[in-house]
Amino acid sequence: MNHLPGTVRPLLVLAVPVLVEQTLALGVGLTDKWLSGNLLPGPEYLAAVGLTAYCLAFLPAVFAVAAVSVTAIVARAVGAGDLKLAARATAQSLLIGGSAVAVMLLAAVVAGRWFVALLGLPAASSQLAG
Image 1 (cartoon, helix red, strand yellow):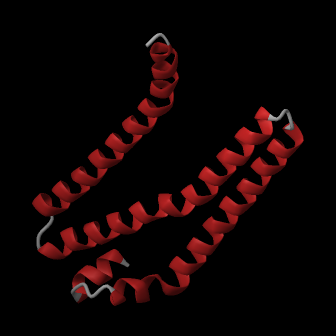
Image 2: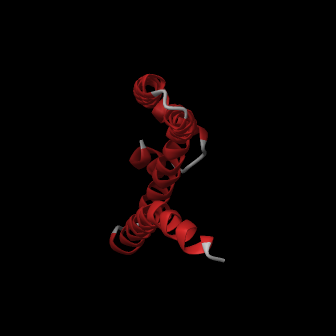
């Protein structure tokens, strides 16, 4: 078990910031829902906030595809001593991420209201979510 402290510490250094970020994001979502459910009149506000939270939760998954992929490629390249490949992969991941942002923004502008209407919320909630 001598290897355990050498393994646990780097793992915690990597995992704890992600856990803190997710806990804070959960806190923001809970606060949004509590505020809209308790301070705004009518259920349409809570429904709109809930729908927006679902959509915002989907976005990190879209960007995680590029992030996880480039992490593996850069790790292999750095391990092999090929820093040019690592730099090129990093630059390409930024291009892919920027392209994903542009596509998602365009989709939101062009089809955002249609997407909200497709989900079947009441008209007042759909208008607020849009």
